[in-house]
Length: 526
Image (cartoon, rainbow, N blue to C red; front, side, top):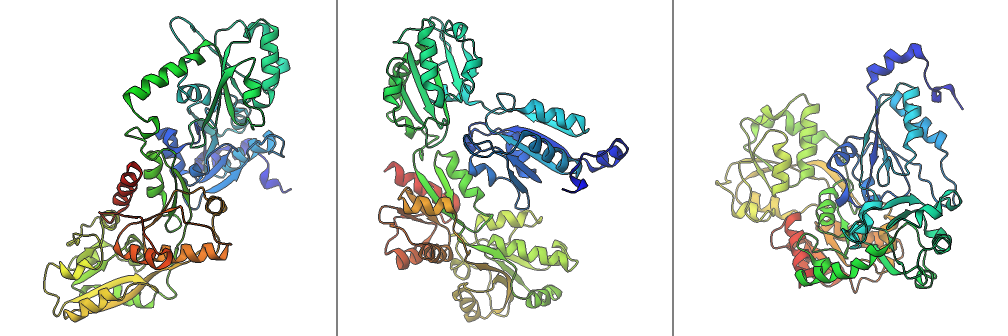
């Protein structure tokens, strides 16, 4: 162990203050992205170090920047866990290095979250910190199960406690309260029942147990104290929230009212994809928009990157084109990757958007136009169908004699576009701006879900992701996809799906991610 891991001394404090490191103790809520607070989402997007607990949903880990250092310090029952002293040390260490640290905790940081020890360590080492609340399962689980914790006639109060150490609780006092909410008590169910009955609670007292509240895996069991152990026999009760009291009996009444107003609770207008597991296949680091859009509609989203985007084998051709950019009449950008890599290279050459003052720009797709707008530029032309094939057909001026720069993927791109431009008399200069490759590995979660036939829909946004998906799956033992819906973003991708799977079940009418999402919703509703 080297000394650079030790807290700094007082004479080093000025350097610390200049570094401006800060620790945010953030509540992750229920783990579902849809229940994350706006501030938590913003902090995750800016995090340089993420130190997170075990019950944090993997989807949340994708919200941080690519270069964020992610440290799992979760405390798992029955398994080795990171000592609290080590967690404290990690927070102090990275803060003193000037990093923006997010300490992501399940639920709310101040509800059974051990935040006091971490705050003490930060204060003792003059580290800046801020606490960001989260939605506690103690409040959300009953609500999501249709159980009100208070009622004007049967429950004027409720108590929240953990049964992790039942011997320390005053069961005689607890038994007298109208409503009890118990966290971390699944393994202590028999003790909970025994103690409450011993201190006078009726065996007919209603009880509900909610597992994985707020996620696609949510399950709810209801019974009474006399029979709940029989009802849940053989079931792993972790993580669960228990609700005990007469308010549990209101669940059936409330659900009946909800069903009258909405024929199917899981098909509410804002959650049409509830209960569906959707596999998203896009390039690594570019699936967040698709994931967030589907998750907000209630889907359980699994990411399986089927493309890796990186630099081309050589920058020579692109650099030469940039050096003579004023010679071109048009710049054609057919993807967000083309935009990002072209302008990154432009900056390396000491130029910016002003170098394109005399060059018109055509882009394919609204998303490409949005990325271009980040450079302060608006395209001169976007084809109406958002596909490259319509560029020539709808081009706004004659191409005869026009010099066109086309930064594109190095290998595997379509040649039709260049041929059609050339046939119309354009002088097309193709240059490699980036390369897309098939990843070497498949996400373990994605592979498991596919092989267990737990996926309802697979989305494809390009023909290359179709090809790479099939290659990856074949390299890892394959899977039966007969019952899986194949969803395509447009005709070219659909053609690849037909070649690889012999079918395509969904094709977006509008060839965008929004259009693909809408098509999936319509398919589910049918």
